[in-house]
Image 1 (cartoon, one colour):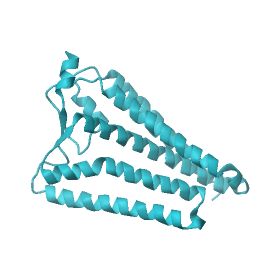
Image 2: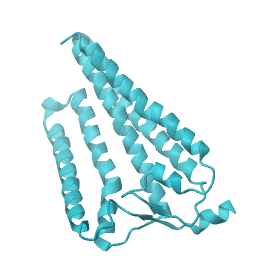
Image 3: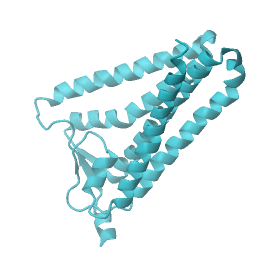
Image 4: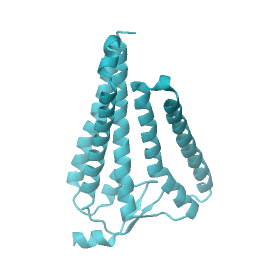
Length: 225
């Protein structure tokens, strides 16, 4: 029966931020402006870093990767929202919804990990300036970015694959402008205990550990200032 319920669901409905028709043009223009500014600003950062040889340092290497991640994260969610508003069609396919979910989780986790790496980079630069170039050599910088990406991929696939077996009944309305994990789990008819435990564990790991790492680096830096 669970298998049947799941196969019947071919699409979800993204309800967006409001159902007021008069507010739709304002929301469309506002988010389009935000999206264009986000893309343009981050592209300028990447371009400036790539063209200026003086900026070819670990800090700006991580910053360019963070800017690229921000572009990817914004592109994962906002364009579909703009299309839905423009076409007045709230539907998103089952495959599209889970793809959006997976990529949003990947880039969200990657962004958190990069912030921790950048905090560590500043800690080494300020607290161990004489050993900075020896510690933060290019190979280590690339390795840290790749490890961050790996953590993001594992995080995204773990939640997405765990949510795929869920069964959905008649209610397929997501009260959000993109396919958020918590909202999808709320729509499920089947048992979501494993998914809830994964969310709880990920919240402590993906968000808690980076926060602790950033706070630790600032605590270590405070005596310097």
